[in-house]
Length: 593
Image (cartoon, rainbow, N blue to C red; front, side, top):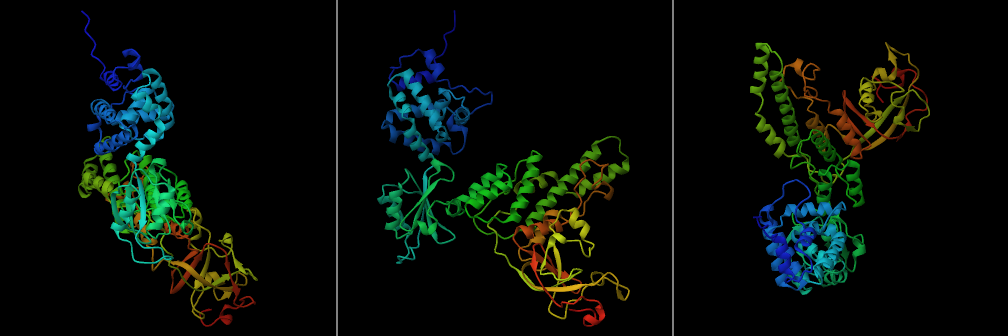
């Protein structure tokens, strides 16, 4: 005797929704409303257990369905099916299938019933709804799915409510007392919206009420609200229309750029929407150029040092298949101080973990002498435990990527000695054509910017080196020299290090790091994994970051005085039109200028 097949609960549910009026067979309904995943990837069995925080999303979604459909019974029936059959994993897979043009009606209903991401699938959702309506007839399900566009919009707005930014200081052109939180909330309620998840957050310009509402206000309503609260303009974010979508409306909106700008929109946590979008973009692996393009579009000047550090760590982690630390690539809409101590602790943990793995691999490979075993076992005993190091890498602080800080420049009177007469501008593209110092080879090898060097000091205090003057013994044997001067400004003072660019370069490269491994096992082709464990040079990063921060060069102590390296052309005037032919007679004692 053949065993009777159990009824499909979803088919039964659809028949219940339509009052048994569906004019199709159970087989056709199963084919049209197939809820099984095409993928073999496991899915959550129910919405209730699929993901923490699911229930509040589900409740808001079903409330929106009820408001649009006007049928509490329909919503109750849909909720019963959702809780007993459809999981959030199925909805996500359904949205993926729809997005790549492979979705069936089963995918559509999975998305419809659990609803995350449904806004992205509005058009195929509507088309599939019409196809379903043709099968089940002019019933409640067919009717509402046929009208998928307004339904999708309302549901998406419920899941991703609009957010208002209302400043609590009146417009400077209107004046009057400050606006209280209660006054602002009451004005929103008069617009027929009940504020949700509201709080007052300090922003860059004034205390701001941040409040979620659903459905969103129209542009006219935002304008009217702005007038009522004596504001120049009010911003409203519209996440159901896109991550960066929103509007800015009010009597003087043009004074604030005339359009919605994520860089200035304050979120509940206190940071800006722009910072959140940049964080997501960064952690998704976007190239630095794309991130800077997005930031530039919003008028955000991103701190290049923090961005450079985070991007290098991110790219190395992605290349190695490692999970990104929680604090990596976090943007903020404010200026944050550098934290070289935290960065150094993180980088040291990376080096120590690499050392542990080198020692473990060495001990596990081939025949080793007892001396080697004792040596590398001793290395492991001196290093922190692997779990401790991994915890530091997971939870350790990394530089937040904030707004670029205000530059703090230094300067002074510069003096340049050249073999060329009649100069009015010093051009760094000629670097190395005159006297080449010891640093020339490493500068070229490491790809550092070309530069022009100048001594720095008041008149009568600058004493050029004899090699620069072309002096051999007691005579100038390398041709005449010409002296030029310029007033230098806006240079980065590497000794004062006001933005800690020097310390950050040292923290990243660890030039003073002393490995626990024996010297012959560091950066050795004979020991696998040992490359890069030793300390690195900090100067290349220091110079790149100084230039990226917009400084025209830097100034530092040099010998008994100071010197400057200039990255761009510098206008100069000659100290004397005549060449320096006798360095002892031309200058004061010691050759000072």
